[in-house]
Amino acid sequence: MGGLECGRLLAQHGLEVVVLEQQPQAGGCMQTFERKGIRFDTGFHCVGSMDEGERLWSLFEQLGLSHLPWQAMDRDCFTQIAIGEQNFILPMGHDAYADKLKSYFPHQKQQIDRYVSLLKLVGDGIGGDYKTREEMLAMSAYDSLCQIFEDPLLIQVVSGASMMMDLHPERLPFYSFLQINDSFLRGAYRLEGGGESLVRQLCSDIERMGGRVVTSARVDKMAVENGKIIGVDAVMKDGTQLHVDNPDWVISDINPTATFEMIEGANLRPVYCRRIAQMPNSRGSFTANLVLKKDTLPYQNRNIFIHKDNDIWHHDAKQVEDVMIHYYVTPEGEPTRVDLMAPMDWSVVQPWNSPDHPRDAAYRSLKQQWLDEAVGMASLVLPKLRESIDVAYTNTPLTYYRYNGVAEGAAFGVERDWHKGTNSVISPRTPISNLLLTGQNLMLHGILGVTMTAFDTVSHVLENHS
Image (cartoon, rainbow, N blue to C red):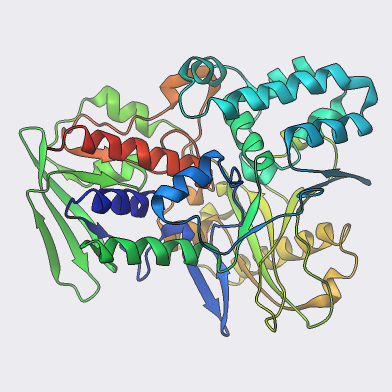
């Protein structure tokens, strides 16, 4: 997504753009796949901050994406949080959200007002309040919530949309937590056609503006001379070479460590490479793509998050303890489609990431076990789910790694760490003068974070372009 957005913005400003994508279709984690004529998303589910005038809407206006068939989720209940046997219905809008929380926790009214004011502070200043960002990047999300709220259950409820980020109590910065949660209060939307609609529009615009999007082109080498990339080599699907000679700029949207491994003759400072390489990856996700039988469970215009118990922050993602239910916007006449997602640690599937240990019966058995448990948890809210399933497809962090090139199948890229503050944020600039980075590994993850980063990356090109 970030690479395509950069390509579109640069083509719009009259630069000659070539986008190189190693997969047969562009988009990375925004691409879709088809099973028996039915399409599923690999990474796109919903976006926040899409009400007219909000941050993502404004950026999408500039990218030509705001006119797509966006569908607002239920404003009175865009999120349902189920913790044990308790259910909490949460609306969009800061005031409505605060009022609803107060109806559940009337003894915590002042604390709720303080928390919502912090959400608004981060959201209002997301484009330029660097002082707040710097301060809150150095604060622990979990510790901060414990300091604000006296009721442990309230901490779990405001953290309940946990599949939108990696709730790592030892690492997640308060800024990241607030930014993600705030964005959905400013307009949570789904998109008919999913991620494919975004990718198709961006690719079409790049080519309409004179650029090229080349798929099945795997970049394997970048030559550097005098601190500048002088050539980019890619291998095409048929084995032929594609060479880009003397590019003015190169923007990489893949994992920064993987980017630097392709560079020959760069002489990068070891301390820089070591800092990047030592950043941990976020946890991945197990996903079950379900096709439901006709006239069984109706579409729900909300996301549903189900948690085994009231200790969301300390689940280890090595078993199914949290499940998100996401419904697709489907045209009339098509079967209802649902994704079930559960955090899954890379260590669960790492043994099969080896030529000596192919994905065998044991791997298939693991996926079936996770499917059964995820459906079992989802059935706590949707009791008729299991009998309504027509067909189910499953994937793991290993799937994301193999097909999308995502390091360790990380759902949210490189993790930020509050202990390191802004040092856990990666700049678009690199020690190589004409190499820039973009994507969710840099500052913020999610569609909003990636899009903001793309604009930031492109600004470095435009301020040096005459």
